[in-house]
Length: 425
Image 1 (cartoon, one colour):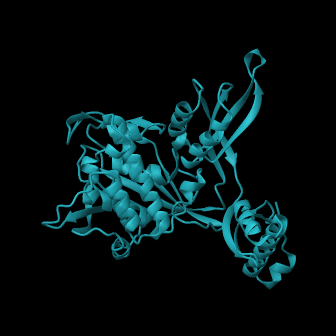
Image 2 (cartoon, rainbow, N blue to C red):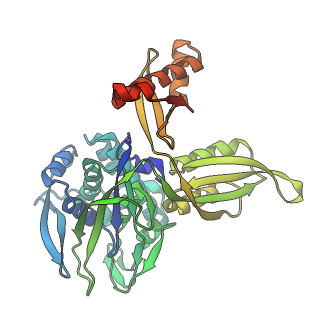
Image 3 (cartoon, rainbow, N blue to C red):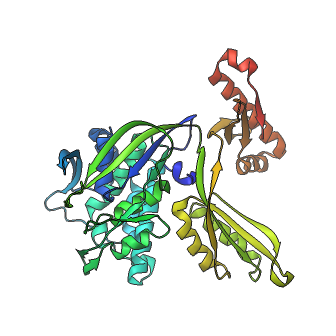
């Protein structure tokens, strides 16, 4: 976003340059560390407080201060609960209702819902209960809810187009929580780490929290090496705990990269299926797309004993491979899947909305090598307008292309407009 849903989760329209946020989790990640890193990298505290006023939740105060961890300076963000507030939100539905009632931007609300769904699914698997019965314990407290909404709102306030993160540390020790002593990483954290790269770390203690990893999973295009970009700002978010010899800091690198996703790595998931009713393929594809798949398609194949079957292929950002594999194994008749990583190169692209005489249509603009721009109207938008107005589908699509060409011409200026070409795909 690798995964376009996650990269565009915070901003809906891309330009020729995109702002990338890379979280270097050398000492782990938590919700308050993400907040601190955003503030340290230039997010204004008053702007974040202003955005969070749209949250229908009272009895808390967001504060930030400069601190040192093992000789390195960073920002420690903390949510203070006002005496007598005492309100907690321990179930998924109360939290989702609060998010939906907030006045936060729609992309932030969607990412927040995904974050809390991830947390609830992890808790339900660990404790063997239904999703609706999952109890968040520490995660449901007011301060954790503010951490999640604040982190997501902060990314949008900074204008971030794409989020990426490093591998996560895997260390040992024990941590005390509502259930007593648990191994590190905590069971819910391990569930959230499914499909993600981890690296051994010698320091004992909880470095990765469920809230921190859930936020990153909800918005990150992938986990691994730092992407190619020009570094603009660097911030450090400080955690509360102290680790001997290791600065408990989360490093955030803000940078700019040209065009769209450029060169990147995707995970290819494949499996052959020959014993599933055809009607179930649509359901399986829909679930994979909802989980963030870049593409899902079926290819007719001849399997062993010359039985006709379907080769299911899903393209994913690396961080979603585990989730996608679980969906395929649960929702299909296959007994196993294959996964491999491949490199891809994509064109710079952005989505604009244009006005036509039939109505408004979203159009995807892509810049080809040499500077030529192509326009692809959104089929569903065109089909809906064609059905509503009775106009031929091709006529609606052509009007959208012309409107996109006029818009691109105005942006280039009169001189460039005469020599520019805007072709349909």
